Image (cartoon, rainbow, N blue to C red):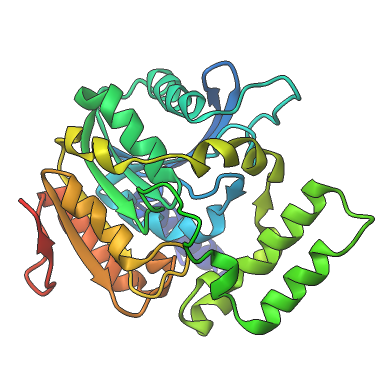
Length: 315
């Protein structure tokens, strides 16, 4: 019997959809998990050994920019979560604690909730603090760590140049204008400045233009609550306690942290290697995405740096 063309087209379409679903590596799950007394939003992509992605901040939720990690889902189970009070996680009440220790226990609670025996970590910016302090306390749970343009491990000094000092003159003027607005609350000023500064953290303008900054979520109250603790934090003396394999991804043009401070992690951690991304600012995983994925995938899956990369190995 000769089938009609519409029927054949429908049959072909159904077969294509079945093939696409069966071959697609993106097995995506989303939900609300347990932190340490707070609800944490999470998203899981792929199957395999787990990799937990810890976003930058504090008080930022950059899920749009981290979506590139989805490509690792063919080999790993990539787990994203919004830190307490951030993104789609449960908002913080005025009496809810928000400290570094809280964030460490949130990660441990989420590990138990998701039934992870061991996992690797990719931590960006301030997320490096959560990753390393977690590793100090729960080192037996960690397979490996990737630090992405981590914040300085040294406590700030009075003479240190700030991020605002490094911004383009036009952005500095806009920041000054926001600070002069008498009708704005402190949190409103903080969020306006966070949104204003974000595009300047990219080195390559075309990479910055690829991000829809309007869709990013900000929680300035979280930033404010953690600012005093982070302002006096000095991680460098305890880096020697970290024994798991670690890769430090350095953005040569990152205005948030000098290269020498990012390199200090590779100096202080016993089994650490560092790779400098020469055409990146704070977001190498966006600005040099293909190169970044090659380096990180080789490290996470095989524990080595690709031969084409000139890595600084401190072992």
